[in-house]
Length: 316
Image 1 (cartoon, one colour):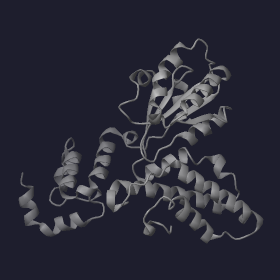
Image 2 (spheres, rainbow, N blue to C red; image 1 turned 90 degrees about the horizontal axis):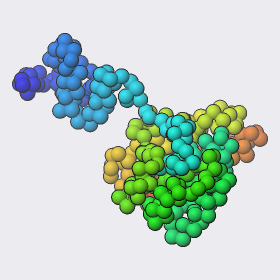
Image 3 (cartoon, rainbow, N blue to C red; image 1 turned 90 degrees about the vertical axis):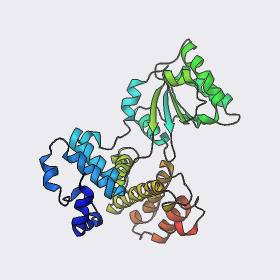
Image 4 (cartoon, one colour; image 1 turned 180 degrees about the horizontal axis):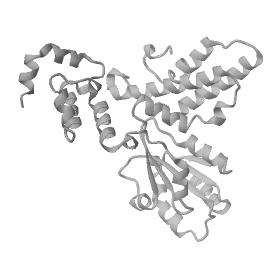
């Protein structure tokens, strides 16, 4: 109750607290001893003070509060345990990925398919006229036990409405068959299929640390890092992963981050890593220097900058 009076009487100390880069980790003027004595409410009161004085640090302070009260596992980045999801599925139970901007599970599914000897997977990007192709591939998959990925199914709701009958009433489906569905969130999606599927909400990770963690647990594998025996290769993969996390994280700042909400996703970093791999194979591995101007142009101007409408976003 007396916090306003205390701040006014010791404004210089509170000003220093306000100006701190990480106030949630600093001693609170006039209150630190009291907060330390309050075992039950101390950390929560610290969170409230940070929320009141430095609203921009609220999420970080809340993260620390949850970690201190419940444990680190409740704040650690959640990885996409796609192998565990596969174990829960069956030949009659589809796996439904609910997408948001910047997310695409196709590469993860293909990587898992390689490990399970189901690669290449059948893929159909839904849209006008694709229902016939998708139905044919699905029926072939029922017999051959292949994996089928139906992409962008919010553009093929009519075909989705048939899936409940196809998956439940088809007499014989090979035990190895798996149906993967990617779809943006839409109220038109059939309730029956939604209820009988394994639902996975695939959202871009929050924070640079979480972004790097996801990249190194999904896109970047040990097999990828071992492809080229060069420290420059591993360093460039890390820099590429760091840059990808940055451009995704900037979206949370709205117009301050990007004037236009660009949908950067895993296909961008996949394409860039593939280019770097081929470029190093043609230069470093044969004793030639890396062409940094070529690398910068292909990544900043073409891949990430190709969809930008503002010239000052390009340049790397």
